[in-house]
Image (tube, rainbow, N blue to C red):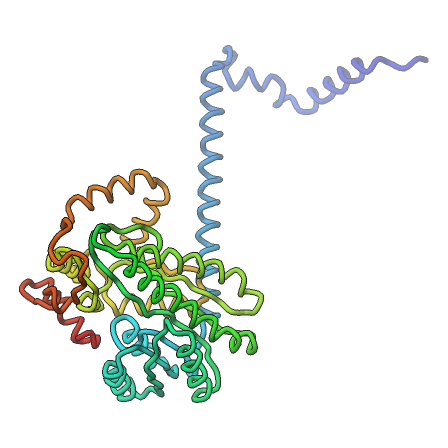
Length: 389
């Protein structure tokens, strides 16, 4: 006998299935009670089901990301450097943020080496840190001079035997309209803010490479991400340091040297009294010192120092703070044209050229030490506490 057509076999199997499982026969009709199916209703049902599946997928993805970040944070904390006995070099460590970080690191048991140009400031800082029980080396050093930097690093190595962490903190800020800035202002800013950090980094790297470990921390600031009006030399030099810092993190990883770039906004360190002001210097000092003393606009120095220390101990690539600064940086990156137009408006509200012109005046000479308002009194208190006066 010839083979039966395939269609007959299928029909026979379907008949057998119907006899065995009658509940599945005409299921479609029974679900709709014998009525014609509503295609639009079915489509809506399928759409709703698809949306539910999509929402579930999104929720699972968010939960997964949350778990990933939580695990990363746990791992970071577990791997965080123990500072007890570590040798930390801080440039500009005699006052301001540098001194605040030195205090906190000393309290964690680190051995501290600080440098600055002012010997009297260094003496006061060393006495304070010693009273806290720290092992401190404080030496005068002009970080723009490579020979002095190398001599300072040798002295640190001779005293402590190693260098575990370098914090490039020293810097200079000049505040004035672009019309009042000179070529010398840009040169000075580059020499201190960029070449100073470069000199220190190149001096400590042989030690860190030889030991196959080390941390370098570059205090860059908000100006390294966003160009702030009336601070062009500062911004230009900090942008240079930002590029060097982020690039060196990549190239030094193979030597087990970790580089952390720090981008803080205004901080209540009291440093506004040592800023250089030009043009209408008293008006420039007024807006800058108010910004640096207002709690909403500026960050407490101790909190900033704590976040920086936590960041480099955990090996982070960047530390951006506070939240307002982080949001401003992200907004400028997402909409640079809009951000620049906003800064144009800010520039129009700032003091015009004039006053002392291209001459320079310190904060003390420009009224930045005045405490005639509650906010400025807060800044004055920070300046006194952090050896800025």
